[in-house]
Length: 131
Image: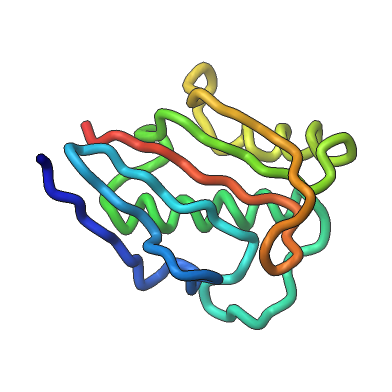
């Protein structure tokens, strides 16, 4: 059996629950869903609106990936969770798409949920693979 590494990234936001920022085995990286919280101030209010929250979540994911020596180009799959799917789906997609190179989008699932920690509108987790 391969060993599992548990990663905490100092520059990433503090966890809002008991989890590692990422776990890794055999070059596969599973990044915990990030919330639109601020890395430098966990008590700062969340950004307003789905676009700003999506940007903050994606920036937080980049911080975690960069802390592991990776980038968004290594992402194989993403899961997106929205608290108001009908209202926010299109705007989230527009913001999300801007983080990936043209034609290099990862596989993805997007679902509506009834609520999230810290009152967030969006949460995104990732699966990445080391080259």
